[in-house]
Image 1 (cartoon, rainbow, N blue to C red):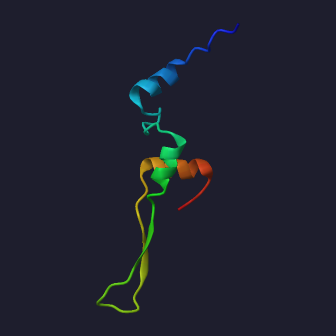
Image 2 (image 1 turned 90 degrees about the horizontal axis):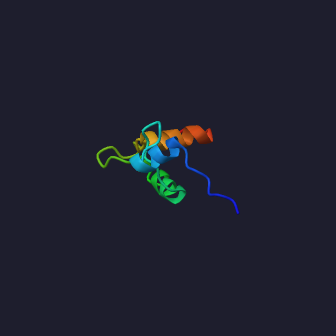
Length: 75
């Protein structure tokens, strides 16, 4: 029989604080995907300026920025 592995002090700290060493929230993969899905690209067409369109990206949170950085993706 094998004894269960002991959790490291770092893992226990993250579990207790619910924050990473970078002070980002610790969450599940599905929660991270849901968080990343909140980023949008909106097409703006002012009513008083027909034909004048532009796009606006929502601002990424620090967690979203870090996730994209780790993936090697730029916004």
